[in-house]
Image (cartoon, rainbow, N blue to C red; front, top):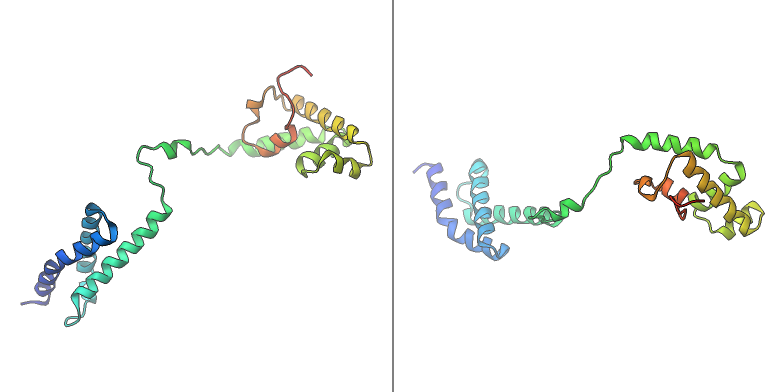
Length: 186
């Protein structure tokens, strides 16, 4: 008998044991059958690596186990989404417009009075409280609130923003115009 025929007979004889082991690993007969099939295909493709006279069952079980672990690691990173509900929730906003929008925002920001721009940047961009910004600017808290509010109104006008829905995904614009009731008379 040729070495190829001996290997084929050994593979066929190992099928029931491989299937039982695969079922014990996966707890799913369908996945187990796929795992056994992949094991046999991998073993046949790498038959030149098998050394005649060594334990064929141990070699096959090692292949099966490695395939199972690779599949397990892969499945751990994947999200099962049979009906597409998860994928429907994922959104990616186009970024082609972001650069243009940012440049428009920077130009509008530069048109603000210096004291308004300073107050707005301290509160919106730096995340300072009104009290902290007032301390930095050396003015009263009410003055900072007024400057921030006026800066937000002026920015909205310069950027022609009429409502909250026009802000889009840009966090910089949202922060700068945050708390401003757009669309209502000022």
